Image (cartoon, rainbow, N blue to C red; front, side, top):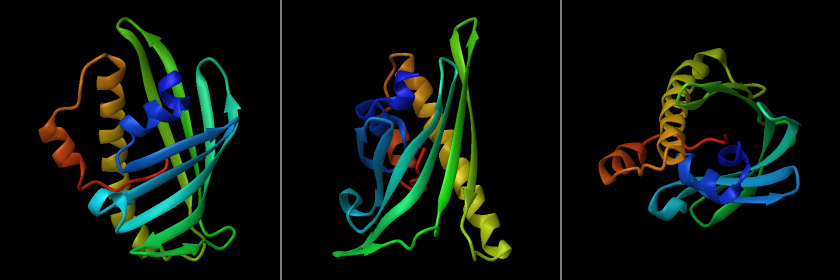
Length: 155
């Protein structure tokens, strides 16, 4: 569970995360692409809705978007994502299942398909990185390079 709740660890396995800061059950997560995540960045506020020994539920809202040097505040209700993690014991430690529900009011359904496929691929790769780090292994340069083209998202 510590890999899902410790900011320094989260920043390692979440693809595109450039910064994670915590304040109690709230956190602030910044994802970015481009040179050091500075060309396009999004900042999300996360709130823990449920936390137990085997389950974590967190809701993210979009706080700010930055393209180049210009930061823009996000309108209230423009983006909401709920991420549920279920951790179960296994023969080799534990397994982690993640379910993600994203709500973007006003987004046409035709736009959801391509974005959701890219987010699904990024989620799978982030969870694979989580597994490697939790096992004490490292993410090699080839995997980091391949992951750098993935969509950063709040997890």
